[in-house]
Length: 454
Ligand SMILES: NC(=O)c1ccc[n+]([C@@H]2O[C@H](COP(=O)([O-])OP(=O)(O)OC[C@H]3O[C@@H](n4cnc5c(N)ncnc54)[C@H](O)[C@@H]3O)[C@@H](O)[C@H]2O)c1
Image 1 (cartoon, rainbow, N blue to C red):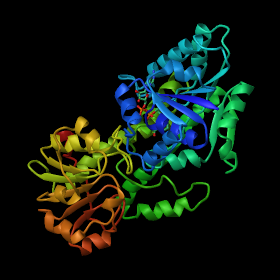
Image 2 (cartoon, protein in one colour):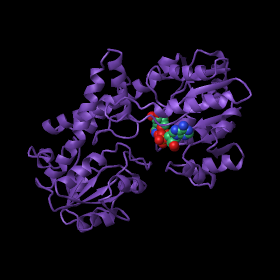
Image 3 (cartoon, rainbow, N blue to C red):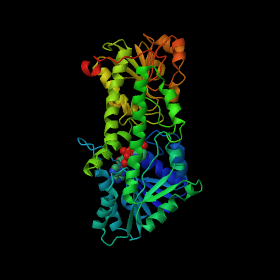
């Protein structure tokens, strides 16, 4: 079995490497020659735990290769996966499908020059309902007598645990009307049958919508617990106990109930937006998802207000130490990270920001060039007026609290991820502010807050 993976980003590279680990012969294609050049030299362009060894061992075994030559890769393949980006379209929030359709056109052109062997064209990118059928039309127009089948195989991996997620998924979703495509995709995922991974075979449209429904549901769960955290603060309850108390109910489940600064990342914000737009086109508005987006956007801004309040009502002229810039730990991905909303708001209110992130600083520098980037967590704290924890990297979970207190000019810690226990922070002489828990300092929001100041 041979496959071509078109697009070698987070999803294409991880999926390609994992399929090759299953024994499939994989060619990863990207139009970014610099990225392919690095991969050919054995460099991994993204940070994802375990990916370097997986790529190296499969490349050495001859099962995984990298190229910019889409034609050759497509023509040698039994199945071609489209794993290109589907970012938010500027201005209207619809998914920008230009990369998907361009890739489909290039695949069609390549197949037109090929041997005519049957090829399954699979959309792995997250695409609005109806896209797979449009990909099919692009192929059909270019290849009226062509032997191809279309399928949708949305990807559910999470950055930071992407390999484990791909190798041991909760389920695999395959949308197609073609028996041949079913057989080819079933064979590709055969190693997962041994783990009794549920396979959901369905239509193209349903597979496309499952992916959006999953992300919108998870974003809703996070937003729900974030609002409960606000209520906890107002009434003196503890959101972590609420999360445990409801999460132990099997109908609810414990995951995705961690209160924090609001969801971000490369998927939830843009996928919720795109789902809302698709639903509008179908004249079936999704008011829950619309509300989730609105509440989440407002929350990120309010996190900046919260820092101002913890700093005594103003941050002008103050230095803030920030730990964690990426949208979650174990990735270098900065796309839609809460830090991108919170830190510019604090700078606009007059704060200087000294920041450290274990893997995200190269990307962060492109997006926030005027932060003062530091070599480690403690360097960021030197003479700062407050410490803000934005991303819960493991190395921030066991800071030397004595050293933290000694380094900070003011012993103020604002923990937007509830990494620490209020008691231990108070015992260490720190003025501790967290999310939705009693025992931390009350954080009344400054209503003359940042949106007003800025
Ligand atoms: N990142 C995630 O955690 C994640 C998880 C699940 C699903 N997804 C979805 O998977 C898709 C890809 O996301 P990503 O994060 O990997 O994107 P990405 O931006 O990291 O990578 C996309 C790659 O595709 C390449 N590309 C674009 N057009 C091309 C073409 N015509 N030929 C060859 N290469 C081309 C780009 O150069 C880029 O390297 C998106 O639809 C996303 O929503 C992402």
